[in-house]
Figure 1 (cartoon, rainbow, N blue to C red):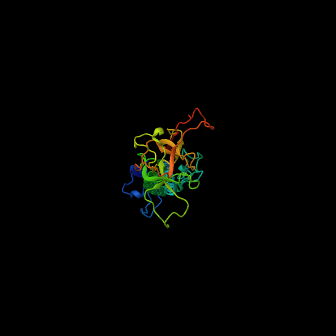
Figure 2: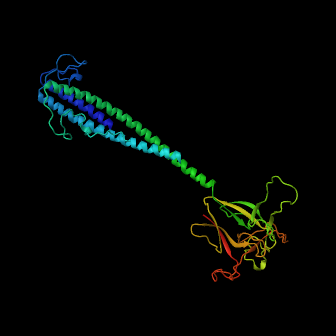
Figure 3: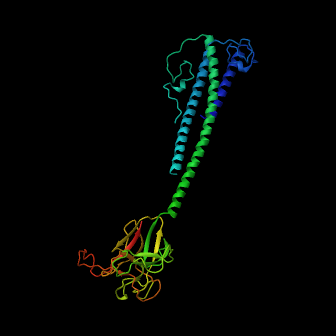
Length: 387
């Protein structure tokens, strides 16, 4: 039963009882013109009623009326309990929703009475009901019983007021709940959108694609120029560099004065034994200047270059594959890099300037290499993977 239905039921019950008692008085020869608000006074005057004593009723009728009122109050108390339970649930939901909102903003109670008494027995006034203690109450005389009826009427008014207040409180809690649920949904959408924006605009893996001017289709490419230390000196850096085409200078002096230098890079692979594809350059790679591209892929944050493999492990994405390169054994020591299998040249020169040089790497089974898995004299493949 809803709170509105409870109000209606109680109102009609009181009206019904008034009509019943009025009919009883009329049937006993009494006038029905009495103020209907005075029906329940039972000879106990009130300020709003005439001071003339009302009709007398026998004890049996009065006790029957009390029992009827008790039944009505049992229903009212049940409705109040249901409303309180509903209130408690709404307050718990409110607390959880407020907690969710707080949690989202940082990354992104029950008011039930604690009493051992059965709440349905609150309004019994020591008159036993089927749900309360079955011990008979004390015997009362007519005057006391009439006073008890008046008290019941006052309690009834209070209960109706409580029901109205609870209904209003419920309505407010439901409105608050709806707003909080809307806030939570908006926060979830904002969080999801923020994560998607973050993944699409920040982080990711960066790698160098040696021998090519562009990156694969899923990455951002910046064209650079391969370079490094002179191939036949003892000093200088050991790692190859991918140099930007348009350098930005700071303080400087004219001329070579520091003793450490960087040079452009050349392919040093004669056509006769080159394993590379001729897709992007059909001529002889040797002595031509080598490009490189710096590539950035979003959504993946780890990079791995695997020598002697053409495929990536499960769960990894292949960016490109090719052949392993480094400096010659008789030259300055450098790092191993993966040259794209279909290299390009910056411009066709065909003349040797011998800056920093790239050679293909071959397997040598004479020193500890696990042959026959590796084959003596064969060029090693390589693959660049991201995850």
